[in-house]
Amino acid sequence: MGQMIKADLLNLGGGYNGGVPAHAILDTEMADLRNFYPFGPKLVRRLGTSKVNATAYTEQVTSLFAHKTAVGAWTLLVGTLTGLARLDGQSLIALSMPPGVSYPSSVAPWIARQLLDVAYVVRSGTGALKRASSTFIHDAGISAPSTAPTLAQGGAGALSAGDYYAVATYLNLTTGAESNPSVVSAKVTIAGSKKINWSTIPTSVQLQVSGRGLYRVLTDQQAEYYWVATLADNITSTYEDNIVVADMGSQASFRNGLPPANTSIIENWSERLWLSDGTAVFFSQFSYLGPLPESFYSSSVIEVYPDDGHKIVQLLAFGDRLVVFKTNGTHYIVGTDQSNFTRQTLSDRHGCVAPLSAKTAEGLLIWFSGENFYRSDGTNVDSISTSKIRDLIDKIPKSQLKNVVAAIDATRGWYIATIAQDSDTHPSLRIIYNYKTGTWHVDSFPSALGAPTYMGDFYDSNGAPLLYGVFSDRGGTEHQHVYDLMSGLVDDGAAIDAYFVTKAFGLGAEGMLKAGRRVQINCAQTAAEATIGWLLDGSSSLHNGGRAISLYLPEMWKRYSLSSADQLASTLQLKFAYSGAPALDVQGVIFESLTSRRMGVVH
Image 1 (cartoon, rainbow, N blue to C red):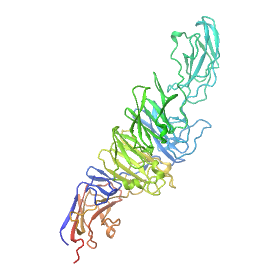
Image 2: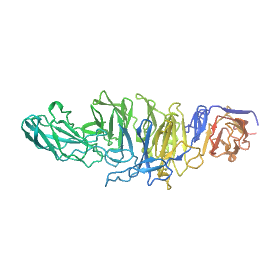
Image 3: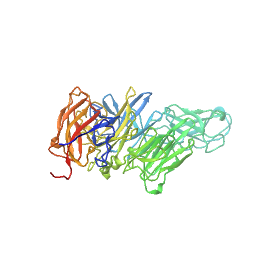
Image 4: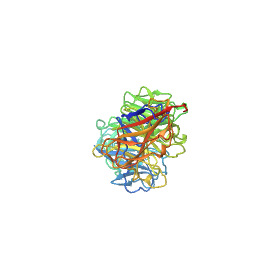
């Protein structure tokens, strides 16, 4: 043997770079990385996964939403195949639906946004907008009364002689939601100094209706109706009207139509709900009293290049603009006031195929286009995957490109996405982009779980971040649970198989064959074992099967013999594998090698 040479890897924080040859990556990067993540210059084994609801729900869970009920308090609403449920302690309780109402079974996620105190939800193939609380779910919007009130001359009063017409509306006295006016009453002609008696005031069977609004014309006018009274119940059918013009209120609105049918995209922006059916963008109304999230006017529609042959896939609030993702480009809507909205284009080349991949984080947009991951500050669009995760992107089946989902961990600065690989029909890997450092890492889960099909970032009672997720049906009951994706030291009872593989080092002697000799690992004393081994000349198999080592040594730098003298190689990679339960941080690696002879020289 000849000269001893070594690699001092005191910075392991470069992340995953599996898209280029292992000898061409940076010294700080890893050629392969699973279930370790870079944190500064070290690698940290990730946290585990645990069930949130102890008892399996009666059907598959598909999505999650935090319904905020007070400052600092929230209820976890859970989308299921046929409805919604809520987390109550460690159990999921189904939300009530109106009698006779059912929703088709679907694995498509329910997508929710909150405006005022109501959660609004949509789902592909499930009709129009729904409204939900912690106890119920039903269709949003209030249908206009289908019958008219009846007017008749009453006793002595203060109204002027003339002809009068009237309409009624349905009200939700809690949220302020109101229907369009009813059909117009028949004309009543009264003498001077009289009252008007209302009767047959319509009542509603809709659950959210708790009152009615009464409107009538000014004397001898038509088509414009002004507030007369609010009935604070859904029962009373008569009213004695002695309201003079000076005491009449605002004009009845004919812009309180029902939400558009068959929408599957929703966002809350500019104090309005924004919906899309994939072809156009619809927005709810706004009054001087505030938002009317369940009221939609037929003309409140924005077309986004409808003739280009591409679908709208997502709407995303981004500061002072609403981003409209289409499959072929990214556009946005801006408004100078509550009604003057205009459309602009961010990029006509970078679209989005995976609606749930689009996220915002600290002034950035991040999304998956179908061929790459991109980020934008609202002006420029840049690729963030470059070649680093190219091999993983290329393995996503075409049928699964649209199913890439993501979440944000703002505490760590992570954009977290799940992807399928090869012939998978469900996600199987979790890939994480640190948008503060530009590094990537990769997580995998036990085969019984796969990778999450939906993720949501929440917070606990102390304000600490939570990352929850749900999984697909793989034959067990795992798909009937909500999981905390950063909890404990095991994956739902199974060991976390974590490993990293270094760059392929020539160690400054690329023209020489060499043999590995010793390895030093810098980590705290840990009551567990690991496996280390050489990968020679790019091999995927450990030389001689590697070596099991104890990490229960008191010194930080733990030294191990690891010889490959029986098989010389031009490049050496070190693989470190760990499946122990205790948490583990690896803060540095040193490995030593001895050169033997120059390649191609025969003795």
